[in-house]
View 1: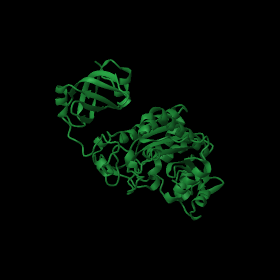
View 2: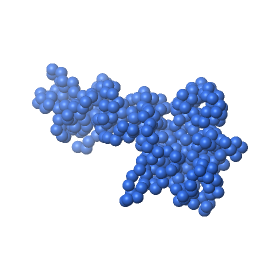
View 3: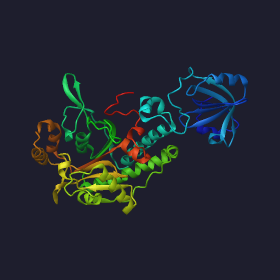
View 4: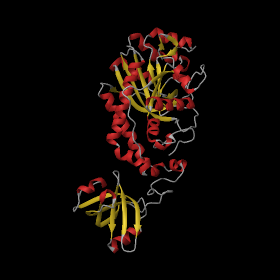
Length: 428
């Protein structure tokens, strides 16, 4: 008899079935025992009345993996309105050692550090696994939205020779006796691949050795990167980003409806045109000094509240960040060279995306590096490609974990990350 999942039981009323999963919960009453079996799809109720089967079940602890064969009957009070009766219960392993928290409770009561210390088990809880299902759906939507627009998925090195991209801290390692580094982003490579495919994207890990210990930062996270050629300026990039976000949220609705329901989440609509303000105007809205070079988290929150209040939007573009705060490859605004053709996208008052138009002329790269007092040599393999013809181009990067955290309302990005890596955590 082929195994079926819990969600398929409602189509098998009156039939003999075989299910298997984890013993999520036992209720041992005087004359009957109720077992809740959890599998990848959900929960199934099993009713045990046979004394012999009951005696065997009493020795099984929660989280023991079991196989159950029995008959499906309707019961409106059971999960999905059905239950399995007259069962035979067979353990598929030894009785499980009880985890340090109760997975059958609606809410995990353990502290987040305890959950992370025992992540392989904590992730079994529906609230934790739901966030990961949403993450998977978002990535599927990201890929589908870009595939439909003739983007090509690429895969770039995560071990690189240069430690100087964007001036951020990097993780150093030994590469057969030579110094190497974990990649901070696929930025250089995705730009170079615009010269091959015109439109590219990548889903992959990035590494930032910055000593942040906040609820929004990780030392390793998943970056959803996009780059496209033949743009007029950064506004073309913003249009693609808007459509990509709409595709991601559409896929989350279509593919992760049960996970959304588990967490009580209703994904927002992406406006047909996301509101945008220039950086100088954003400072005024946030009540920040006019000479502020960047937006602090408090400024972002104020801007998120303004966007919701004035435009009914959970999203807001802030354009024209000062060139002093943008990487050297950023294209300046031709009309206001002190400001960039770059942007951030705020999602519910937090930076989610950074992007913009890039330089595409070799001479401009030499000038940009010279203006910052940086040598060309560490960037030679990157900059040299621009001697051979590159179109005007731009792109963006979305932090996947931060996106899911904002979408689900998680207080800490680690709540939606399977095995977070940060300043203090290298295991499990």
